[in-house]
Length: 237
Image (tube, rainbow, N blue to C red; front, side, top):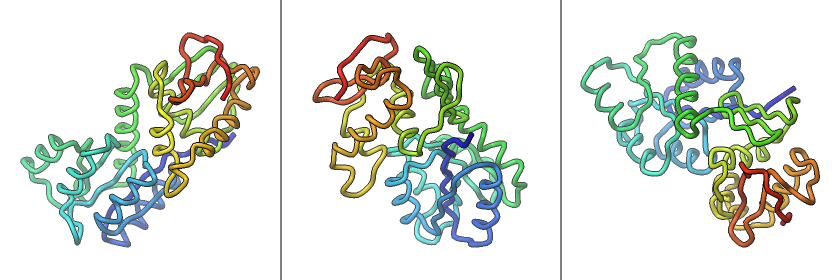
């Protein structure tokens, strides 16, 4: 059964490198976004919430280290830096600045994919004590992006999974309407709570035994939603 795919953002000004990376990541099951400069890369990262960023240091408009600094000011997304230089001091400085890994050109695609999988696994393990969040009959694997109900895999759309992912990372805690809207939508849709209510209703149809009396995805009236880790009953929104 198909599952939502991790989105990797490639920020590199060389078209040949981007084509090479895109082919490798798509074969490995990723969705791929591209940017040829820092400005476009930061914009895409803001509105599309990638799961992983591959960042070249030699960008035409902004050095990769400054791009990393700006990205880290608001996002904890895993970042792997690409560079033609292998200077040890620079590598240490970038890692201290928030890069998750550093790969020197030229490199093999197999190595980069292995480092990417490792970075994603570290990220999700740090986001939660366990990369697999289990709530009653519901299991959400944040690394493989699979969702199971009563040990049977279920299929979610990308937005449904994104909603569940955000709630699973904050399991047991309330996530506000505004935060969920910003995580899932872009543009004018980010201001329309009705989109969120419709998406919550669709997700409940797939994960709740009784969507009208939800026990997993519960409503905090006037505030937001919570993935319940105590399995209490709540009134649907």
